[in-house]
Length: 564
Image 1 (spheres, rainbow, N blue to C red):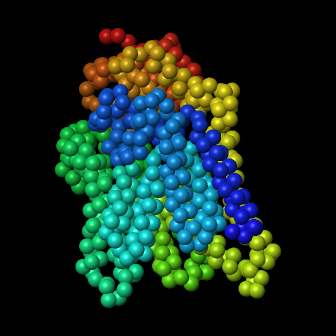
Image 2 (cartoon, rainbow, N blue to C red; image 1 turned 135 degrees about the horizontal axis):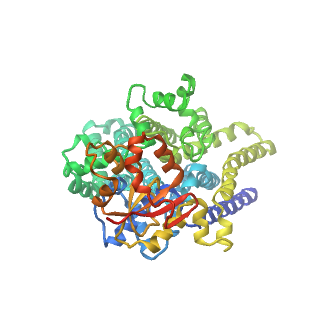
Image 3 (cartoon, rainbow, N blue to C red; image 1 turned 90 degrees about the horizontal axis):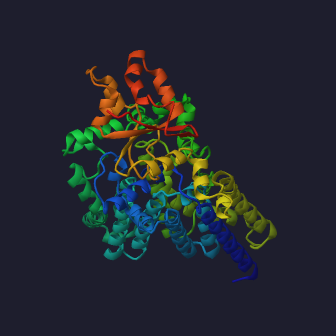
């Protein structure tokens, strides 16, 4: 290794270590993210309380595949809910290792290390790395399957590699339903990879079909435990997806769930299913013009914002759009590398547009395309650097300076986001002991003190009506009954739309064995004000003790329902 290259290599390694340390530090705080509290920690916690996996009809998320959530259960059993963040982040590190291994073989050590750093510092990857989600598991298994298929072609199509790729693809779908898109896309690419990479005399449609079938069978085998579980419970192996296509068990229970799942995200999906797809939906919701709608695929890379559905609820980097274009403008000489570039591009495009037209627009839903785009970005970076250099002065200062400036610009964009996360997440005060666990959680979840009061006051088997609590049940030791009264199918909505005027709201609560109420005051008052006078009078007894609550603070109340 030449001396300048050695210096750059060690510099990149130190940068990588600093990035990993910063990300671990950001993740070293109690979980407060919505999906962690409604799903990825809440459901495993209920499993532990129940002594094993069981059906939870009131939580639709509990029917989703949960490969990573099973790992989180082990940590929760040990009484630690921060370790799941580290488990999730490990899958990002594993993916970075895959990218390094692939790029090191194709482009060299420097591009391998730089590609790993670039991937780990992409804003959406950073955001996911410090939360208890499962998307990074989906990314890892999908990337493993994709790269194994590329290796399968280079190794002249051994069955072991193909089947392993299929099993990894099935594990991706067993991590999150979005992995079904991985199965569809990669299954479509298997015959293309075979026909494009075998000799003409060995090309065979029958062999291509056989390989495709083996890959699909391996994928479905790895996913089958979740299929079987859901089929036994609901009659639909992929419940709640495409439920109308399957014969259902417990129809009344399932229909009640379907009515209770509507929210702004599902409304967006509903709009997207109509003519015009996501374009019409965004025009209705955000008053976007035709040219804004037509540029949506490009805007994903330039306009992302965290926690803002209008701007895709996440952030990518423009370099994932620009550099892959340069990869095809400056194509490598090696034929196999060009073929691999084509496969990486086709996977990214197919995955993006399958998701684009099926889901509400969230950058998190397309995150499996980040690794292949990272590989293409490194090809684009190398091609650009090679064009900058003069043939007779390979190590000329202008070329080295240009490469360094471009690298700094690429990582600088990502590091800026990483820096802002320290002010958003505020990990230092907690890690240094200036803020305790209760104070930290309350900063982000103001309902936490009310929940803690209820935990200490209400019996574990008592049911509590939770009004406008966003289904965030992880920290609740009692039995929550989450209620969004605006939603048809909810307890209060059904009560107010019922024709039996003799039944009181308290009778309705007693029928559901509800003894307490935990409510968010501002949203509850807003709901009451939009009711007509008759309906308001019918639900008023529910809040009869609101002037003397068991607990109040931070905009939340804990009430006890009157005894019969």
